[in-house]
Amino acid sequence: MRRGLFIFMAWICVVGIQAQSDFSFILNKEGKIIVLPKNKTYELNIPKASYKTFTPAGTRDIDIKLREFTPDIPHTSLQERPMDMQISSAAYQPFFNVYTPMLREVSPMALDFNETYMKRLNESFDLIANGVQYTWPGVGGMTIMNGGISWHSGNWSLYGGGFGGRFFSPFNPSPGITAGANVLVEYQPTDWLKLKGWGQYAYYADEYNNPHMLSNPFLYHTQVGGSMEFKVTDNFWMGAGINYEYNPVRRKMEPQFLVYPVFKSGRFKIGM
Image 1: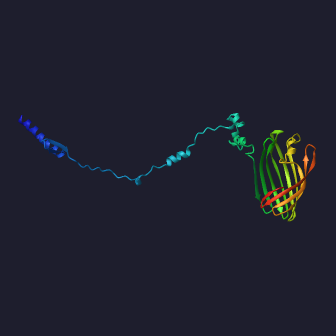
Image 2: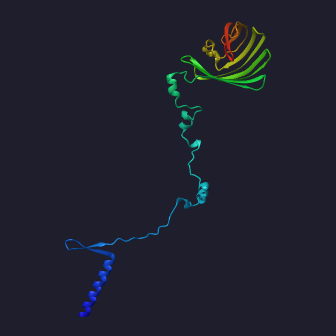
Image 3: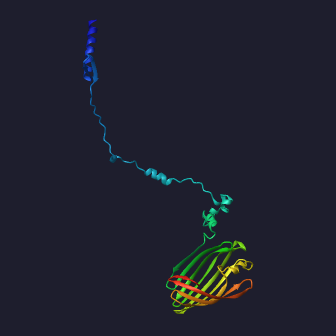
């Protein structure tokens, strides 16, 4: 009995000593004992890290796989497309413009143009190209491409070329084909006099059944003629001449007498 009591008392002493090393015992004014844990300092050994020590993984294997990758995109040939996509759809037509119907509702002449390109080949020869499109509401219109070569030497100049395109009028709602050739010769013997001569052949589909062709001066006609121009001032000339135009109904050349003004300013010119 005594031995067991001694062991118990010894265990109590050991626990008390251990408790005093981990806890603090405080006696307050009321005579109560308060037990508080003691503060301890722990040292954590955390390795330092920096973004400079980061080494990215190599991308060589990924780059090789991307080079070998071939996307599987289905391809539809022209024969497999629906027939309306091959013919009827305006999106498959050349020079398609989604705003064309809207512009034509605003003005039938909204898409008209007159563009000229000139390329000097050498001191005597020039290459000239011109494209025009005119629309006359209720009367007709035309789209023509002109091309030719101009030669000039001293007081002489010569132009020769051809044209081709399409036209339409109230007598041919579907566009017709037109083509032809023309030539122009100029000679200026003095500073105040200039002589001109010209000739043109024009072909139109079904010309004999279209009286509108005879009354439209903007369309090309088969003709030949000449004129003289007289200098009034540096920027103003007066011209007079005669032109013979072919009448397909009467099948003969009919004369037309010409009197016209010519305004010049640098490269800008209004007149024949």
